[in-house]
Length: 398
Ligand code: HGY
Ligand code: MN
Ligand code: MN
Image (cartoon, rainbow, N blue to C red):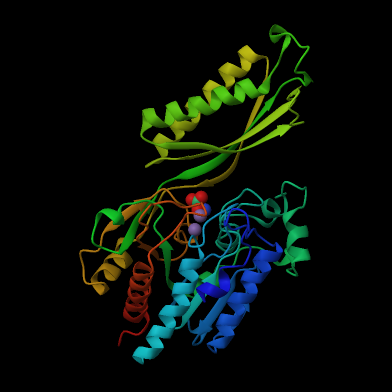
């Protein structure tokens, strides 16, 4: 399975992935998912929001145990973030069939669409729509860097954009959702455990800062006559780092767009996207407030206009203790429990469904990079752990 997915959407030069929502690479990933489902005799379906499901047993019976993750990537992302959870789900099912497991609850493997929000800027679109955390109107308003709207992209990919919306009936049929994911950090690397359990996801969000200046000639405009938005942007990036350091949080300007983006022209507009995350809401609020204050102050002295738009936000997620403890028991107890700053569909769905996450050790902690890697033995341990959890949850004798 891993080898089949490896070339899909892979950039030859960087080795990173560009599996962005509703693109050809995404379609190839979706075709792969369907093939794996049908090869196992699972009932394949795509829901109203474009999420893919592979069912074993009667979905309508309810109280299903669902596993899976996402197949889309960030720009130039690694091979494991998302796909490891989906491949491990199919491999865990194969393992359970080898064990002769008898399912007493329906089981499903899911691929949630557009988890990374790489193309339209909003994380977890597929799961947010299903959970009613993103309205059809809000989703239809999403536009990519080329001006293609989400509905247009969905339509071109063969999915009806008018069908999207909350899917409470589907979520009501889920008794537990367990997502396996490569660890995006190095906590497990310091233990002898290849697998950990998630405790919480930090609150996190994305804010777009628009710095509006005055285009002019780089060579002939006196410094005192400039309204240069690049200066304001640069000062804001440094202020974000200071605010994060002061608060023990994280803040990143990883994406910037400059207009007209000419070497010899003072920009008319600089757009910078802030990604900030913190252990709790108050800390996150303090960081973002400090960054905005610094931006506003510097914009004033630079004669630059400033608007800030929050484009994506996910409140803190505390995974339910009952399910977490049941999983810990199934895995023999003393499994490391980790908090994370990374968002996931399991975090979005936890508002509507009991959810849990398993993390597979990442020896370098690197993610959202072509260098992302997990050792094969650890991935195999992840499959065995997921199989144990699914067996414990979906095959227990009532
Ligand atoms: O950005 C995140 O936390 C996740 O990878 N979507
Ligand atoms: Mn990711
Ligand atoms: Mn992910």
